[in-house]
Image (cartoon, rainbow, N blue to C red; front, side, top):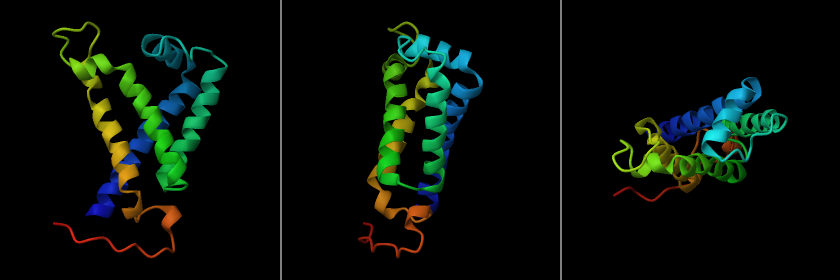
Length: 144
């Protein structure tokens, strides 16, 4: 059950990053609107968006198959942390009772970031990844 849970967590987070990357490639205008709305326009350069998208697609592809996880997992966490910080108002006040411009639909950003941390924390316990192929699983202490 643990192997399947970690596998599904890895796949779902990698697919999210893949979708964001593809969006930067095929819908550059939309990606710029997101940058303008959430990231103070820091990435709102039309020629930069597709390059960022290709990088995100590459990173998500590595995550999907479980290669170079020591590098890829922290990168994916940082990508998701950036998103989490961009919607912090929606984490603190999801219904907009105090802060303006919040949206309860952004609250799962917190869950995704926590999932990224779980993948980093349990990296040595994942078995359904390519960078462990042929390697015997490490013995784990008994669960209490």
